[in-house]
Length: 105
Image 1 (cartoon, rainbow, N blue to C red):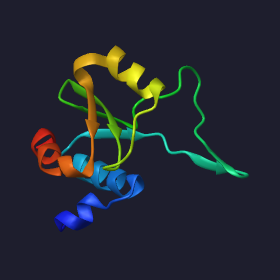
Image 2: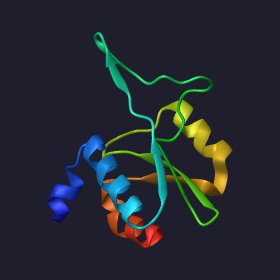
Image 3: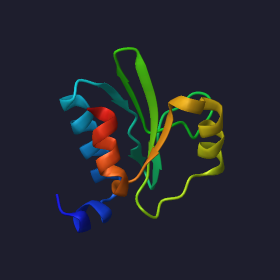
Image 4: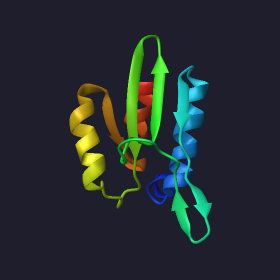
């Protein structure tokens, strides 16, 4: 993957790459995908909105990861989740790919 391609990934593309890498490295992964309902995107959630995009688990380690494009911004709700989660929270962007590979190895 070229650096230019990685940096121009959409969030959907980036999410797919991270999920495939994590599964290849033996992590359990869950991602709650939004669905298009009429003219809006919605994710069925009960409780507080803004939770991280994916949950990764392997060998007693659990990571809650928010995935953003290079320009993507966290919502106030996402920032609040990050504060409440603490050490297990990660914010990853395509430019973090080498660090992501290291974390997931």
